[in-house]
Every structure is written in structure tokens, then in C-alpha cells.
Amino acid sequence: MSTLTRSPAWLALSAHQTKIAKRPLRALFNEDSQRFDKFSLQFGDLLFDYSKQPVDATTVRLLLALAEQQGLADWITRMAAGEKINFTENRPVLHIALRANTPIFSDGKEVTQEVKRVLQQIEQFVEKIHNQSHRGYSGLPITDIVNIGIGGSDLGPVMVTEALRPYHVPQLRVHCVSNLDGAHLSTTLQSLNPATTLFIIASKTFTTQETLTNARSARRWFLENGGNEQAVAAHFVAVSTNREAVSQFGINPDNMFEFWDWVGGRYSLWSAIGLPIALAVGMEHFRSLLAGARAMDNHFLTAPFEQNLPVMLGLIGIWQINFFHITSQAILPYDQSMHRFPAYLQQLEMESNGKHVTRNGEAVDYSTGVIIWGEPGTNGQHAFYQLLHQGTQQFTADFLAPCQCHHPLSRHHPMLLANFFAQTEALMRGKTEQEVRSELTNQNLSADLVEYLLPHRTFPGNHATTSILFKKLDPATLGMLIALYEHKVFVQGIIWEINSFDQWGVELGKQLAGRILAELALDKPITGHDASTNGLINFYRAQQ
Ligand code: G6Q
Image 1 (tube, rainbow, N blue to C red):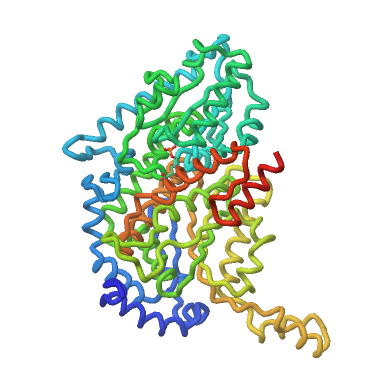
Image 2: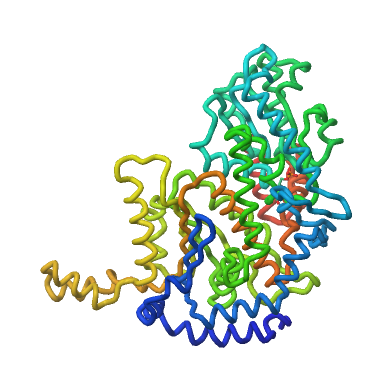
């Protein structure tokens, strides 16, 4: 048993869980009419309601005691001070420096100076594309941006450019290509004109197979469709930490936007990895995105823990994962433009906290991380909500929605939000036999039919959800929301005593395919793997 699961704060929470689990959420609401006021928090335009979680005042007190026991305050200070808390890679974790407006140092160096320099470079470039002084080889202005990257070099730009569509400048279209499957690049290029297309090759390491393969194919397409070697400079820029590899690839380092090893890939949209975002929405909105995140950073660094949104969001997750033993968490934005938000959080959370050993290298004997998934409402309601309402799996869910919308089509938005509120209420309350019986009896059904239908029409309820409402999905609010989840992940990693900032599982994937790729080209049956892998490879080769 680990020291964490034997620690006083953990044991106190375990004992408390057995008591509170006997009180359904319905009962908690019936007992206390002030529940919403007690268990919701506001910061800026953001409302965080965790009153539909199985908590009472004791739970909050005990969770805060766990945070204190685990030294959360000290770890936050260490992160902000630029200490190398990503110890397996010997790096600081300083995404907050990317949006800071006060100096932040690491290794005695003021990293925020570097950040400012690159932001200026981005600003100048965006200006030149927008005012059309940067033109393609034939003298035409750039109309299409293709970001080629994957993982952290893709999901942030995709999610944010989609979410901020109402803020896009009209003269540019932004496309993102990530998948090694040639279909992704080919279908994207189909409608594009090389003379008016700018490629951003985004890769922190500039060694990632998927990105470099797509980038090479993009350059070939460019050269075969009217471009020439001299014109590459005007049509290909790079975002990377690896100047040498960029230059080897054939992009002039003058056309490179730098970032640094202290920025984790999945935390990098605030750096030059955000260049497609800045191009899509303009620099003013990009700076608002940063300002929103900065506001959340300051809140995280200074607010008392019981009023601190990321701390409480993280602790509620711990409560669910480690004490109610849920393994699944849905992210359900009631906003179509946030359709990639679940995928973005999937990487942020699962890559950061999907770890099986503590900082000391000992195997954990408690769950870390959770399976994150989700879709925008109300589409999910007509697909997987059935299992949420009447299935047997345990889960929790975050519901998110703006109070004001960008597309005020007659009654769409109030109807959408009515669904949000009704779903969280129904998941919490369920429907008892008694309620179903009286509902069916009122429909004049025979007593026999009522009894027959009863078990099928009841809903167990008592499903915990968290609701996050915000005024409007503008760049600053989106920045705040993303930073909220970034810091939530930090809080949980500290409680679990793991390193949230490395990703050896991703690195493994980068190596594995190499050997098999070579085997696919061989002219003899493959026998060196297990029978299944040999069989699959040989079947594939036979079909070529
Ligand atoms: C993110 C991960 C991973 C990474 C991609 C792309 O935190 O490290 O998702 O972003 O593997 O890596 P490159 O940016 O180096 O191409």
C-alpha cells in the first residue's frame, strides 16, 4: 500500500465516502435549500457549479485537507518559480510564462523576454498576411493557411480556431492536417491553390514522422502544381524548438517561429504553435485569449483553495475517481463551436495524468487519470445518453455552455440550454417507481400495463455532474476555460504524486512503427512477431 492511501487525509475521505454514498443527490438537495450557493463558485464571467456532485461541507473540508497534506500550495509556487518539476525530462513547466505580463525566470533567464520577442514576430507576420504585403509566388495574396502538426501541435489550433469561428477574419481560411492517412492531406489540398496557400509546419521536435511525412508531401504538391524552390520560402514557415532540423528540412530558419522545451506540447497553443489561431482571428483576439488564460493563472496562483476554481475542479475529480471509483468522464459542451473541446481535453488530461508510477518510481495503488470522451449536446442526447440515464456504468460529466450565443436563430439557444439544464437535473434526480406509476396511470393505461412498463421506465438517477456556464464564448473566456482545465490537471497530478508533464507513451508510439514499416517492404513472409501481428502484416501484404 502506498503512503498516500494510508495517509490521514485519504483515510478520512474513504471513511466519509461510505457515509455520504448512502445519501443520494436528491436527498442532499432536499436537505439543504442553500446547496447551490454553498457549492458553486464564480470567477469573472464563469460559473462553476459542483452542487450536483456528492459533496457536503465535510467533503470540501476533507478534500482541502488532502490538498494541504500533498503540499499543493508549495508545488504551485515551484511551478511558477520555473523549477524543473518535469524531472524525467529535466525541464521546467512554464506555459504560464506564455501569457504572463510580469517577468518569469528559469535558470536565471527571464523567459518572458523571449516570449515577448516571438509574440512580436508573430504579430508582424500576421500583419503582413492580413494586409497582404506578404504574397505568394505569383503576386496573389495568401487566402489559405494549412497547419501541419499532430498531437499538441495540432489539437490546440484545431480546437481554438473552431471555437472562435465567429471571430475569424473573412479573407483567410485555416485548415489543419494531422493524420498520417494520406486522405487528410489530399482532401485538404483538393480545393487549394498553391499560389495562395501558406503551410505552417508545426513540430516541437521536428522529428515526428506523421508531420514530416505530411510536410514533405505538401512541398511536393506545391512544387508539382506551379510552385518552385525559390518560392518555398514565401509558402512554408515552421514552428519548432529545433532550428537545425527545420533548416535540414529546407525551411529557412528566418521563417521559423521559435518556442522552448519548457513548453509541453499539449500546453503549447499559447506559444507560436498558436500561429494559425493568430492568423485566423487576428492578433487582438489572440492577445485576448492569452489575457483570459492569464486571469485564470492569477486566480489559480492567489485565490484561497476553497474559492479556487481549478483547485476545486481538480479535487472533485479526485473525489469521483479515487473514492467513487469512476473510470469515465464525459465532456459535454452545449455549444457546437466547441466540438473539438472534448478531444482537446482528452489529450490534456489523459496524456498528462495517464501515469502508473509516482515521482519516486513506485507503482501507484490508486487510479490516476480517467477516460475522457464527449460530444457536443444535444447530439449526444440522441446517441449515448441512454447509457448515462439507464445503463450500469459509473461516470461523471462536465456540462459546459455559454449564456449568450453567436448565432441567435429564433429560439435555438434557449432550447439548447433548456436541454442542458433538464439533462443535469434528470441525471441527478432520476425517476422513481412512484413517479413513473403516477405518470403512466395519468395516461389511462391499464394497471397491468403500468406494472409491466414500470421497471423499463424508471431511472436510477444519482448521477453526479458538474456544470460550467459562461457569458459568451469569446477569446478571453475560452482562454480562461482552457487554463482552468490545465490547472485542474496540475492539481490532480500533485495529489497523485505523479509527473503530469512527460509522455513516454507517446514517445513509444514514435519508435514502434519503424521496424514494421521496414518489414512491409520485404518480399518474404514475416515471422518475427507474435502470431497475431505476423498474421495481420502478412494479410496486409497479400492485399497489395
Ligand atoms: C504533447 C505530446 C505530443 C506531441 C506530438 C507532436 O504534449 O508531447 O502530443 O505534441 O507528439 O510532437 P511534435 O510537436 O514534436 O511534432
